[in-house]
Length: 295
Image (cartoon, rainbow, N blue to C red; front, side):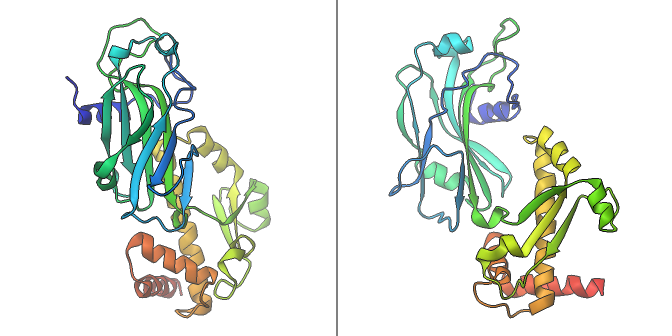
């Protein structure tokens, strides 16, 4: 018997490429939908960007369809060999776990209430993923072309729930090496942050026209080739953090600790405070210290 924790360990190590090395059902779970709050409607959107996520109200429910008649033939496995699991992955706390697991059958379908266990499985801060998948329950000895390792998924859908504070809204344009040389920068520069407007006075809605990021086309193409890897995600998060820090320091250099209410700088400080659990004063103080060290 494979336990839930063993299933998730094996599932996390399973193949994640779009092109699978074995037979799978690409369309099943495509219409799976998520409802995050009890008083909201279901949505089959893959990405959810929520301005003010309230962990106290979170009550995830997933709705799935019944498997099609030819499901077992499509994946090359019987119902008895498969399980349906729901896994919640907390990118902020860097942990994941199975919150729902049941033997797979042709009777499955409808709403799956993930209950209090799902609510407590994540901090619901930063980036949270909810994965619903049909996986192999046990290892099996089969010919090449069929899933053989317990935990390997044969159908899957993932929902990404992100606070708007963690989703970049800066304007990004892709440039080549010649462009960086024209700016008198090394041609191997990764990105350049340009502040074009008044961060302490312009309203947050004007961030697209006030901050522009020039990103190397070569870097963009390299990241796109391995978008699903943990290394790529870590690098993108590092880049985003550096960009946000640059914007923050530029704003503090202009306005100190007194930006206009609702301005780009004011909203940025507020979002960093809520997502990082730091006070506004501490964030501003750290930015001032960084500026003084560069002086």
